[in-house]
Length: 86
Image (tube, helix red, strand yellow):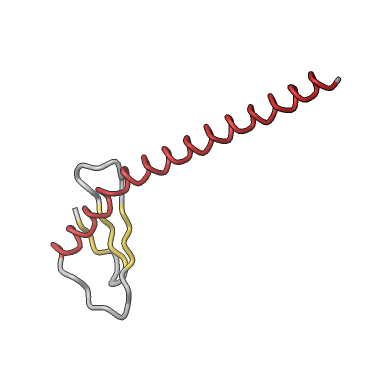
């Protein structure tokens, strides 16, 4: 459902998506696009968002894993040095 709230703000309720509501604020210097163009752009944006979030979460997990491994190696190295020389 596409609903015009004002001239520059459009509220979109997607049919099959993980989003409850999408608020689009149009640039005031441009002419208002037709409903089909707005619907196509909204579906394009909402279709890519879950993929982006999954990729972002994967990168976060990778960074945390690398940090944990690096921390454990540094700690093991310190304990090894202390064990050998003390």
